[in-house]
Length: 96
View 1 (tube, one colour):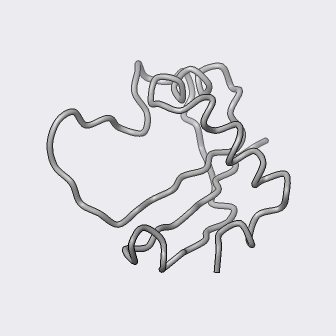
View 2 (cartoon, rainbow, N blue to C red; view 1 turned 120 degrees about the horizontal axis):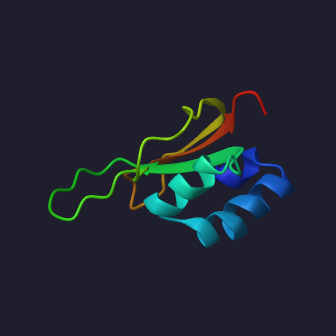
């Protein structure tokens, strides 16, 4: 079952159109520091890789306040990525 079946039209539009505009660890740090990120979408594929460079999800100086997020929805697509499978998670910022 496709992950889009679990998302409202607004969620899907945000996930496909808006997240790509601010991808990258430094951009995520900027948005969190400014308090401008209320929803975080994370797509995970079960493949182990090695090598350089490695970029973490968040990169930069220590945030002024920790950014707490709570899992809002989780979708597993077993057939994705040549049968390896992937999860698509939505996390909502706590207190927003």
